[in-house]
Length: 423
Image 1 (cartoon, rainbow, N blue to C red):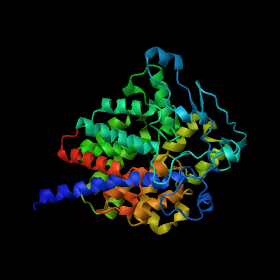
Image 2 (cartoon, rainbow, N blue to C red; image 1 turned 120 degrees about the horizontal axis):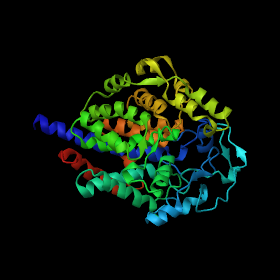
Image 3 (tube, rainbow, N blue to C red; image 1 turned 135 degrees about the vertical axis):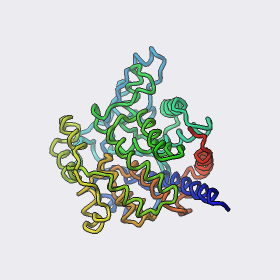
Image 4 (cartoon, rainbow, N blue to C red; image 1 turned 30 degrees about the horizontal axis):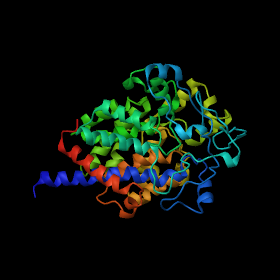
């Protein structure tokens, strides 16, 4: 067996494992998604989460009810463009074409947002079952299937699949529709070209989120080099997330992921690329305090939010020193916020990987039990720890509800990536 064949087989195994890691990280984290008070997780689940479980009802901290979706219905009808992306889940949202029947009458203490009474605080993934994937992971599958059908990446084919998946009743069982999707379809309803519907981070701070990293990191694996992969990743990112913070995170994660797929020593590789990160000036606890003081992040002036999320320290991130000097309880939430922002989530997910010795199951469970935006952070983390390992625990793969379909899609996508003809 030649060296070229061995390298190809290693990349094939690592890429399959990375994709499995994405779907596992998502499904494990789903039940504890958006629990900011990590003490609530063992209270609700009877201890730490150790595998796939159903999402509970009620979700004490849920503020999904009343999130807005305001498409231009008349303009969309005139253009012949579909605008309903919520379907049976519209009852949870404040829209221009449906009536919100659940009132928010209280305030949640962790994040300061208005919430309804306890029995009407529906879980963000209400109705999903143990081992099911969220909408973010299903949109990765939409991307993979378009690549498989076309034999290569085509951004127009992806956008068509993206629109079809979200506007076809019954295709999306997940109630939680991220803000980037809602803003994208609002722009689409107004007549924007599909490739230019992404909202700007400067207009909506949550566009700079982990959700913008996932698909670009997947699509970068079609390239033959990290250099080309980063360009491909950022081009795909801009279809849905026009965010400086997302692009910065991809600048670290794309070459890191590529190096792991090529068989780089996981711990040394992660430490080396972590040095390219600069940490946020505002710690996680200070960020949450600001949210509470303003009765929710939506009340913080835009210029202040921009500074919160873009002011970084001048020194490189020393990941190994962080692990040596700080306990997990000091790192999670206190130093790094568990919210959806890459300037906190990127160093946090690398911390989980390194602190758990890049063990797939331990790492993804640590992320799960940290709560916050563990779902989207977990998909990125799954891609990293999957790419760092030659084996994935079989019970984690087989415990996924879509195991059989994913097995075929992952294998087919991987072969296109290895063919060198995927772009």
